[in-house]
Amino acid sequence: LSASVRRNGRFLSTAAEPIYRNPPPIVRNLIGGQFVESRSKEFIDIVNPATQEVVSKLPLTTDEEFRAAVHSAKSAFPKWRNTPITARQRVMFKLQELIRRDMVDKLALNITTEQGKTLRDAQGDVFRGLEVVEHACGMATLQMGEYVSNVSSGIDTYSIREPLGVCAGICPFNFPAMIPLWMFPMAVTCGNTFILKPSEKDPGAAMILAELALEAGLPDGVLNIVHGTNDIVNNICDDDDIRAISFVGSNTAGMHIYARAATKGKRVQSNMGAKNHAIVMPDASIDATLNSLIAAGFGAAGQRCMALSTVVFVGGSRPWEDELIKRAKALKVNAGTEAGTDLGPVISRQAKDRIYRLIQSGTESGARAVLDGRNIVVAGYEAGNFVGPTILADVTSDMECYKEEIFGPVLLCMQAESLEEAISIVNNNKYGNGASIFTSSGIAARKFQNDIEAGQVGINVPIPVPLPFFSFTGSKASFAGDLNFYGKAGVQFYTQIKTVTQQWKDLPVQGVSLAMPTSQ
Ligand code: NAD
Image 1: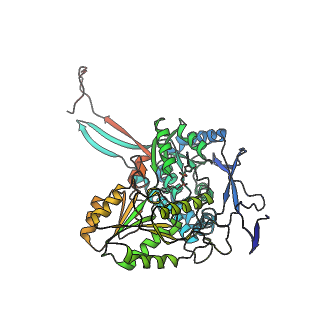
Image 2: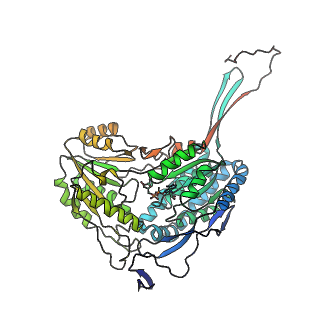
Image 3: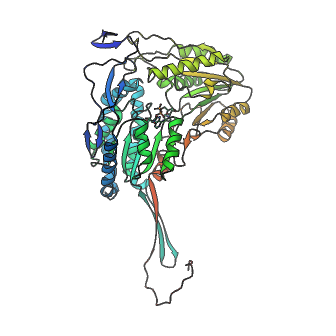
């Protein structure tokens, strides 16, 4: 504790090293309905990004424990898939109630402690996941098959959407509750069993959600949790008993998982990185647009896959810049637990260093740092991984800061002469997660909607993340697979179709025909 100071009863680091207070708790595996301590000898520190305090230690789940988790999921599957759909839904009805009960005091507080976002934003993280649980409560209707009678005389055909078996989910750090909730509630209510691998940076919310799922009545073995990084992910990709993988995270990991799991014949839905653009037309409502850009650019310290990280001003950005800077400067950077905070810290020192490096490379290649959030010091949290709101103007598409996903509170400003030019800038970017236009012209909006190559389109809406009755529909390099998360596509992803053709009629005595049967 030598490199720390004591303030308000807590130790705060003044140095780069993480601080250990007492022995931190060990995160457990969940196998067969039991939260069990791992036998692993290797651990990762879960660090509070505002203070550097070690919150807990995460084991690298051993191969043996991984196999036990898969075995438990496989053993639980036959009974669970035959559990009435109404009973499976009832677990979700109870789960949504329990998530509401623990949303603020347990889940949001844990997210802020491990991930850094503000308490209010953390509640939003939980709430957007909760909506998927609510959606799963209607699974009986969502999972319905189809029926055609008399496809031939006295013969009917119908299709049944059946669960796959054991499915797995691999999660990123930025939404510790929402993304696990995109995955296991849909999967298990369809009748599958599940192996969840939370982010190794902030597993706490997933662990609380698992406790709630058991409290809600999810039978032992239906949901299992393992921990680790690359090795455990490779185990998931290679395992013959796992039928499908849901992944959310970076492109490096996502494409690796997509390719590796495909060699084993698995289904994969892989939501990956983004560079979301806003096109601002000169006729846009100034006040509302500026507020949207600030909120979507700097909310969650820019660590949202649907953050608006690039603005293309049509007709020049200079008239907008001063006001944008003024509003960004007014944002309060502090620990997420402090009242009135707009932006918390970024997840790690490595993330902060990377953001700094990309800002530097932008200025070195000709961008103007009209607001520079580097070297910010937050009183009381001097060791936190803080980056203040940063705005780079005159950015061009050849710059590294434009080509790379920064994933920090950095807003890039570009210029275009016309809507056509702005659309072509956006479409030339490799990512296709989301894009928005701000305008009061229906003609411009309609052209944008039609021509833009992005999976999620906002019209005067900055973060157009669809609610769960639709699906999360990133495209281009932001998504690999063909069935998106949640909504109808989510149900299709977690089910396979069995088609049944039945005949119930008094058959007249007839000879044998070896010809291909045709409809009579
Ligand atoms: P990440 O890829 O580093 O980690 C995600 C998961 O993959 C973790 O569980 C990690 O253990 C595992 N992993 C990482 N590298 C791996 C490798 N080489 N081999 C095997 N497994 C590996 O992502 P992150 O930093 O936690 O999350 C941020 C990223 O997630 C950003 O790119 C962001 O855009 C993206 N994201 C996308 C969406 C979306 O819906 N498109 C949503 C949230 C986040």
